[in-house]
Length: 470
Ligand SMILES: [Ca+2]
Ligand SMILES: [Ca+2]
Ligand SMILES: [Ca+2]
Ligand SMILES: [Ca+2]
Image 1: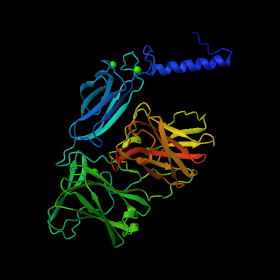
Image 2 (image 1 turned 45 degrees about the vertical axis):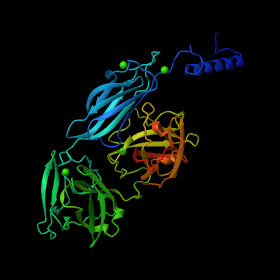
Image 3 (image 1 turned 45 degrees about the horizontal axis):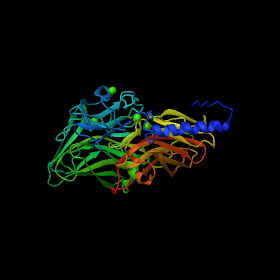
């Protein structure tokens, strides 16, 4: 049959389209046994564990159909660890063990090359996903690695390698009566303070800069890096104007814990004249301390009028699955796919206050949407808790944020405070339509024409409830 699409007869045209459509359906696996398989195989990569790995990580490759012997170790790109043997579990599943280097932290990345494996009909893969997994193989009995903290440029530093606050005393005698010791130590080329709390009482240590009171009222957070093998938690008290407030933070045993405390939690402290910090571990033992600083802006604080003048104060959790961030982004990310906006949305990558952001200018009321896609690299976020984005705008008062997976989506609308970074966190349970096991896209829809600045897109935390539903 000769299907000439250029025929002048419109009825024939329709017939041709219908025949073509039925051929496609048959090829999909439905009807005709003899129809050719024209659909390339796909693969998804998963890792068993969520969170940071302390040893070898197993990556599992699940194929959409039999790939025979076409999938081999040569089809993989592995970085950040040593590749083990690729094991065939079945015609549609393989596993690979990757061992991270000892005594370090970092990220293992596993990619499948494009056009590297094929189905029985010889169709080569078009999807070539990348999956990353963080690791930490540092010793858990004594710190052997430096904290991974990058001190923001806007930080007001109390204690750091590069510079510290004037008149700083990391070991004032507040009457501990010899029940503790302090020494400066160097760990992996990095300076830190080591406190030994002998106990059983007087489990406290001051850090003082009384000679140079610091006004931190406009700052957002207090940061400390803490390491202990024994203390389950530490009370951190900020002292200023003769008043103090203590907040308690739990520590991860045998690892650096990056502690960030919103300054609004220090309700009693006079933030305009801070002079001291007090550390109180819950039990005798050793506490290592590094990178004490105030950073970011008080939440909701204005930061620019026409465009942001500061970076968001967000600290990305270590367990986060990052879609877009300065340090790393998801494989295959496209922040500006053309979804037929016809030039009515203009995107630019910008650096503001040493931080990378994306700027989207929505010019026309008939194209108020922008996709963010990693469709070649679907991500399973079904065990995650929340989606985070930082959004800044001077003129858009709300944005609908849709999550897309398994060809289904729904959107959640968030209101925006003008002229400030809005830290948006959406519980993934609000995304009832998309298949969270294969999320591939986000869609942003401003309520009106205007400009959005976007940063720090990631999934984090654990799903609550553990409910069964899909
Ligand atoms: Ca196929
Ligand atoms: Ca191959
Ligand atoms: Ca240091
Ligand atoms: Ca950024």
